[in-house]
Image (cartoon, rainbow, N blue to C red; front, side, top):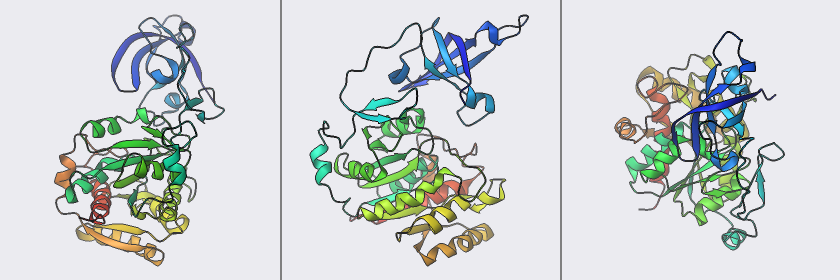
Length: 365
């Protein structure tokens, strides 16, 4: 469960919008008497806990940090017990991270107090909008590169699932992509929060992306981080299959991006990951377009062979990857997946970019 620690803010570190990083020295009772108090990097969400300052006492959750899990190497600031932030007086009664100590009240895009309530109450679908679904958050920049290669200026909105990080602010990628006009906005769904719009489900998130933010294409993926247990069904990417179903139910054009790797040391993720084969082959009941990147050589043939069984339920679309590597390199962010960059795992990013290229090709000129 939670591993609690007390500490004191010693130094503020370079941060990004919605997040404040600091260096914290742990209380002396956490150190040996003869040793200097240990320090760690801690991450605070000012909208939740207030803004830490040097000298502040902080309560920390160090569980994921102590276990070496994918939090970016941070402890998490739970509270500033001696300087609580003022009460939030804004509208909204949608509660996210429900019944946890840090549950947050936000304004849902479709709740009665929202200016978008009437639009979303009457919305019946997403008007044939292409919806790209990808397993990992790291796929998002590459998908956008693929869209830009085919149709620059396309209005794209990220619909963020709650299988990874719940606060959208944790993603530095979203902020940079927005600043560079590659992403028009983010809708956080389920227990995820902090997007431009908040939605209860992926269904209402897609409707909000289309009818409130004016998306021409939506890209659905979880936030940074990924939960997997090495079992056929115990991974957060199962939600990708459900997202394809949602896109189809709402009259969209579901486009599945394969999770591909030529460098992952784990056999279950080599070539086409079992995450994609399970989510798209078993969970996604609605026919979708599964993009198979036309990768060169024996590895490309291997990927096509692995994807072939998905054709029993879906339409397989082979998409050329010519020019996509240059598009990825021109992004304002450096792509990375599981600690590997473009040079280490080209196939991972080319596969995602190919899905974006295909989605853009579905739009009317």
